[in-house]
Amino acid sequence: MEERKLVRTNTQISANHNVIMENRNKLSISGVEDVENFDEQSVVLYTGEGLLTVRGADFHINKLNVDSGEVVIEGEIESLVYSDGGFNRGGGFFAKLFK
Image 1 (tube, rainbow, N blue to C red):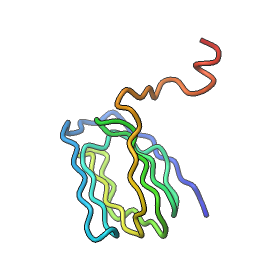
Image 2 (image 1 turned 60 degrees about the vertical axis):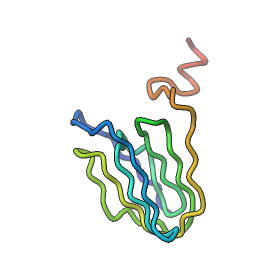
Image 3 (image 1 turned 180 degrees about the horizontal axis):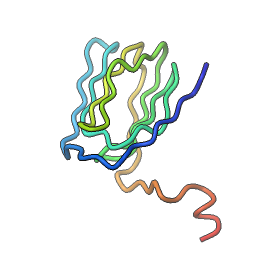
Image 4 (image 1 turned 120 degrees about the horizontal axis):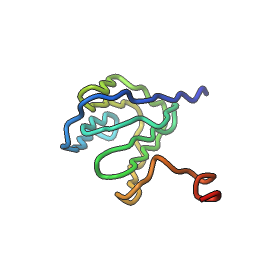
């Protein structure tokens, strides 16, 4: 199971954030600012509403357009979890530790 990381370039992304789930096996998300990582069991996205973690099984990214901020995920979707809207991508554990 290979984990992949993507980095967003400086692009214009729509401020609207929408999530559309179809039959718990297709998820269309707009307003995605960055993709932190993804594998077959989880996808972690930065959105205008906070960090979104999607968990499940057999995930496939069918559409990824960082210019428009759109992502389409297919697979067995088990959960969608948002963290607080005030996430800070500039500082992880070590940045807080040595602050």
